[in-house]
Image 1 (cartoon, helix red, strand yellow):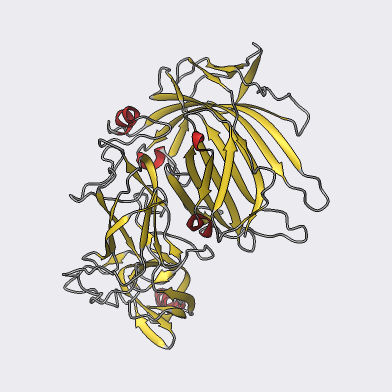
Image 2 (cartoon, rainbow, N blue to C red):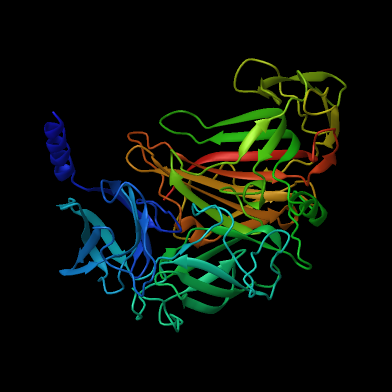
Length: 545
């Protein structure tokens, strides 16, 4: 019986053919089907599959050089009749990280993995000259970039960069490199012959150096922060020819070393992020008017739906750091960010515990009447009204007025009270006239009204793929007093074209112009910070083309 079992295991091992299921840039994690997805010559890529290596992770260092065969695993790429062999940094049963040799030709080809005497079926691959992916602190291509100052200290909200300062970004995919890619690079060279641009807060940044680090495949970019940039989540991206990198963010302070943002002063940042807290309790009261426009399609008339809502949230962020406090995968300030992921996103959100602030929250309207915000989950309270369906009437008058939130307090949070003046709502001028958004040219939106000192956020979202499985979204910010904003072409070119569903071809993308007041603060026992905000949203359905 033992002999039979051994033979069966041997047969299973021999017949377990490696299988490749996907490939991505090691830092951007952009996915196939998104406009900026590509694997560049000389880049580090991640290969996914099953049975493509040993069960336990096996990695190698320079002793003195990297081997092209690691633990019996080899990866071959054939493009335009030329075959090259990738240089692995590590291998495992489900994932391989390796360098695509710079000698691999540009074009469409195939790759295979050989392991344990078996070779996988071919997997399609398109190789380009340059397509940079930027390293982020979260390791998923979203949010804060891993940026250093010239002394190799991390750039953080409490050690923010300043305009005029030179900082280091890291990534992979700038393009082919002439050095031996199996050994450390003694004298890295600037890849000045390759197209390269860098933008921070939508402004061109002076590029001091863009080339390899001392490690094969790992790129280093030295850029100067443009003047006039400040914010804890200033956007940043690189452009290599026609490819944009993943969009990331960097903290920039106009002066000093602590950044400030629309929702937090420098003192707030120092108090919450500079104290080494591992968890922070935040309370929010939101008063929102949402205007949703649906254009006329398939014989159905155009329709505007208004919704008034009030929400109270009391949340504990664990762990708490700059990567989950602000606009990860949302919007930047200043500038724009684009987030790309599958509908089932691998993005890991911070752990949020909903804090107990009592059984219900009361909202007092300008006329003295009240509404009860019912508990949705523990200490997530809401009340809403819409003119689209029967039910309670709208409760935010056109003339505005003062609203008061009151939470009775509970096991985690003491009694909380805050007021907000809902006046001068923002009006988006193109709200009912825009139906298509070109991805090949800039988009200008204009507005009137809004509370002085507040911010406008322009957001767009689009689904693509056979069943809408690829999702891209952008977010940009501007001060309300500006009255207009132009979304750059690079941002729109990074969006997937909207899924078109025949026969009506109903717009499946969305465009929002939102107005936020600067948060007013309130205090309550158990909260590290409480904020109240008045918002107006204007949304419509569009197609990104």
